Every structure is written in structure tokens, then in C-alpha cells.
Length: 171
Image (cartoon, rainbow, N blue to C red; front, side, top):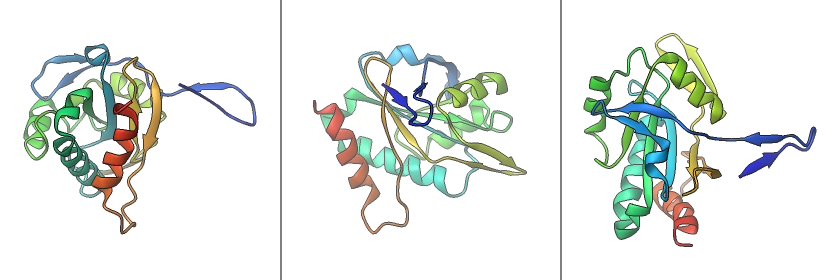
């Protein structure tokens, strides 16, 4: 799906193909999930706040989807390739649902993917400031919409994400 900006009326594409290594050092391509929805998150394993919360929410939502979980692939793409090696992601992966794919690659590969998804990244020493958006990509590989957890809300964020996902995968 293309978004148009009001000021210039130019088309902006979000998302795109990628080919990266997962936590088991397997080459994973976005096309491997053709026919499924993908929920794509960007972050890093050393993150102490947003990343583990988002992955926890995504893990719980995936578990609660039951049989509909086969229609969705959750992808976590690191923005910290220097520290997030395959081995580090393998260790980090153990905290979350086993079906989540955690991906890494070269700095150039990851910068290109983050750029395609319009991810905000600001490296501030040991920490990395970044957007906390979950991108929903359709079975055709095109951007559908996005979800941003509201950690200041009293609403259960797993329930919010489940409602959000079910609006699309139940169609």
C-alpha cells in the first residue's frame, strides 16, 4: 500500500524485500513468508525498555492467536549489528516465542532495510534511540498499516495488538 503526502502528493513506499540471517544463522528472505502476514519490528537485544516489552507483547499475542498464528510471521530486525551477532540473537530469542524470527546482517544491509521501513534511529553511545513501530506487511509483501503500543495507556497492549491483527488476518 502506498501512502501519499499531502504537501507534495508524492508516493511513499514503506517496507520492501530483505535477505538477512536469523538467530540460527539461516538465510531468511522476506519472500519466504509470501502468503502470510508479517509483523516487522526493529530494535536491539541490549535495549532495556521498548524492545523487550514489544517482543513480549508480540509473543503473547502470537500464543493467543492459536490456529490463526500460522497466518502471521513476527520478524525482529536488529538495528545494532555490531553487538547483535547471530549468537547473541540466539540467546535473546530464548526469552520470547520460538516462532519469532530475529534477523541480523551487515551494517549496510540493515541500514538499507531500516531505510525502506522509514525507521528512526539515533545512536547515542551504548543506547540507541529508535521508533517503536510494528509494521504489518500483507501476504503480497506490501505494507498494510502499523501499530504502535501505547505503554502509557491502561489498556492491555496484548489485547490491543490482538484486535489490531485480527482485523486483518481474519479477512
